[in-house]
Length: 287
Ligand code: HPA
Image 1 (cartoon, rainbow, N blue to C red):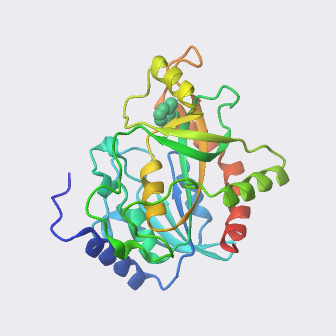
Image 2: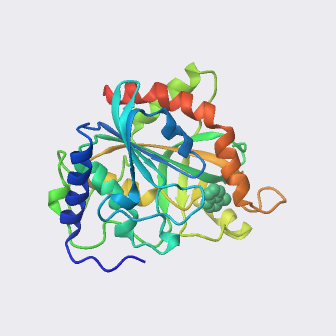
């Protein structure tokens, strides 16, 4: 575990952003966080400068297999992007501040839009394994909130952002979601919407928990994303969330959940995922 930081969060995030700016003149318009098994999309970034998290001041390092930690700056379909290949999770023992530190840095680099992706369990039995779902809303059952602590208005670079209390009614932008749904239809497949429920992990859920979560209105379950989205909203960034249903949630099928399978599904749907993202990024950046 990293030592207790001595400088305030804003100063550390600014130091990381300044380090990145010195190495790449690119002004990213859009941030992309690649979840479990989805990291290969990073190879689609053109003219990329790749920075290992270990070289960026104050960046946390992931301990999970399948989450290589690199920040890439480059372009996708001509759009300047900052891509996080890998993230850290609260279940690894990281604080909320550490989990969302890279998100803070992306915000300071000036992104206006975020595409956040993850692997999730399917609670909604209408989903199939390997399906992609657009996140319409979330339920944060991790018991933690990344915006806890002194409010730092200097993170409020965009209009209306940086507030102590901030709105989450449109945490996942309906407009960006409509772009994604329309693009999927154009590419010949259906992109359903769903509510993502976040747990702390690292244990998968029990069947009783999944039944309870379904009653609460959840369609997907996972161990990431909500904290990054909370911080993105604090900074006024518009969010599109995409989940890959890597497995049906506990108890839906009569079989245990296997992490290897979770990773394998991500790789299997890579082509569809890549096709969607590559077409979407220029549309979103044009908003
Ligand atoms: N539960 C929680 N997180 C997950 C799952 C799951 O079933 N699958 C992938 N991430």
